Length: 218
Image (cartoon, rainbow, N blue to C red; front, side, top):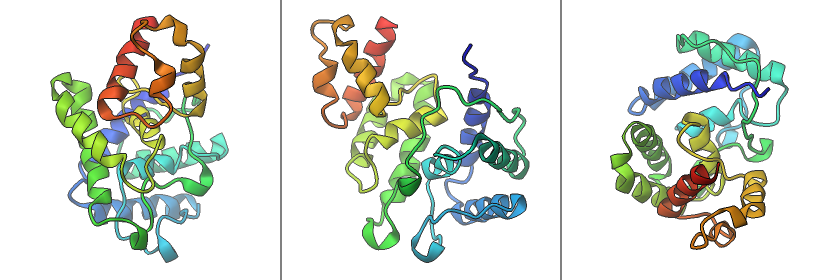
């Protein structure tokens, strides 16, 4: 039996991070505090590790990459304590996609990114949480998604990040899931060619269409 008890923790953490959208300097200090408290080295998140800004998807990537479950649990205990979360720290991580350890940030370093790249990631994060509660915000979500996928450091990984923060709303389109969908292309409507749609990172509208069509065949 798959264990998805991690969902409650991840969603509560996402809600908590949103509170720091306009106070990222305080958020960075909390991330440093977590790593100092548990005695774990903070990964390189900026050139010379001089962290001047950070986005919420990169924060989730800190514990959703190729690390031991014991280290992941240790990190999540740190997040629970520092952010005063009520959800139980998960011990099983079934169905959670992970990023490459060597490319865990959703942005390029300061010298190689545009001024608004991290702001745009925060905006997508905010809009995604809102969309999960009220799907009437579809146009705002798709427009923001389309803006973000043009940025350096963003590719298929953004669908992974959206799945982390609202797994009951969004679909992860990592290589494994793309292959799974392609292998089941014949189950979709004749007018819906998922193989063609997944040749490149989809637009926001195409991404939502994939989610809707996938739910229809499940």
